[in-house]
Image (spheres, one colour):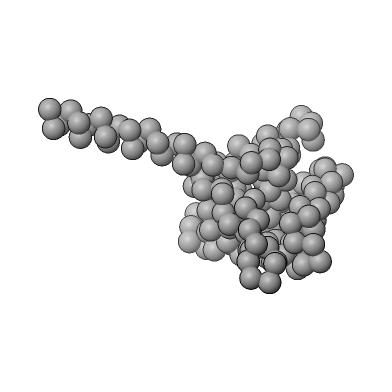
Amino acid sequence: MRRLMAAVSAISLIGAQPVLAAQRCTSSTDQTTFDVQALRSELMVLATGCHTNEQYNAFIQRYQPDLQANERAVSAYFSHRYGRSGQFEHDRFVTELANALSREGSQMGGDFCAHNGLIFNEVLALSSPSQLPDFAAGKNLVPVSVAICETPTASSGGTKSSPKATHSTHKKRS
């Protein structure tokens, strides 16, 4: 009986993990915004570290209107959340994201370029720019260490606290 209870408990815990891993922004629009920003940052890190500037430039040219719209959405998100500090928080986030992606790439060592370089072929093969958000979401590129979609709370002085991560999925590379 104890083994059965232990097995049921273990299965329950395993079953609960996907729920925890699937936490995302409460707003699908915000989640999409951060997914596309993470894709752009990942490709920038690849271009810099793997000398794939031509592919990065092709990505930027192909999706320029969509990437500009996404950048406006990121700016609006931080402006809404932080008011006058929005630009500072936006810049901090973009830097933190690029640094985290770069650290993950460094941890992969010599496998980084070979393992992740195909993402350029995949993104440039999309038949329509409208597929970019779903593609970015499927790559799950926001590192767990980077806080997105904070829950605004008042701290001393009436200002909002720094972001709290609600995105707890583990980064997977395709």
